[in-house]
Length: 261
Image 1 (cartoon, rainbow, N blue to C red):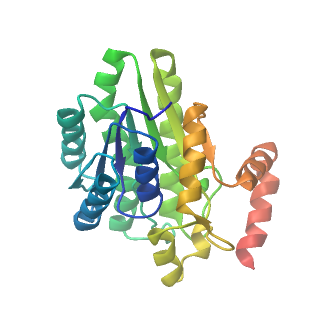
Image 2: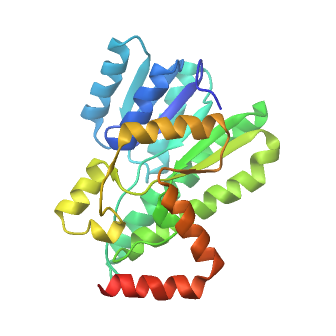
């Protein structure tokens, strides 16, 4: 997937990875970048900034857990750009807690981290399938391949996000649809910084040095160019995932020790 002269939609675009990807898409010659985020003011400023550097961007406030709002974002992209070539379902939320977390927390994690990807697919796949081409990039998490200590709603929802992305790739890959699952570890984003400030940073695997969002955008561009399903930001994620699959019981025992430290 090359973004030059393409229409791209990015959710969760006001901060972090979404913001960095949007700027990189514009720099690399996207025809139009359409930005959605709960923070409508900040995402509007990003659209203005992209426009001031020669790109073309539009924005609108968008709660991705609301299917009508997400469809409205997609409709805006089609109305202004003619079609959607790449939809980056990037918005996410960290929700800590155990099985005892309130239902509202579980529903929040499921709505933003899973159903937003479903709503995006519903909105864009019919036209993509009719054309025989299109691309979906779902921001999941390394937690979706491994786990997230102390954050059951986050871990479960991110596993579901990876599983749904995999299903899309299997089901539609032979029909011209590209699918990638972006699975970063610790990245310097507002979401991670807020988690650290609240004391739940370790639970979501944000310990140690944090990668900059612009570095993630570079990795995404390479992954898209190679039509790679799993786009990993940290090499150790691959190593950990291979160890997990190779001996799940041993991996769980190791994680128990880690969790008890």
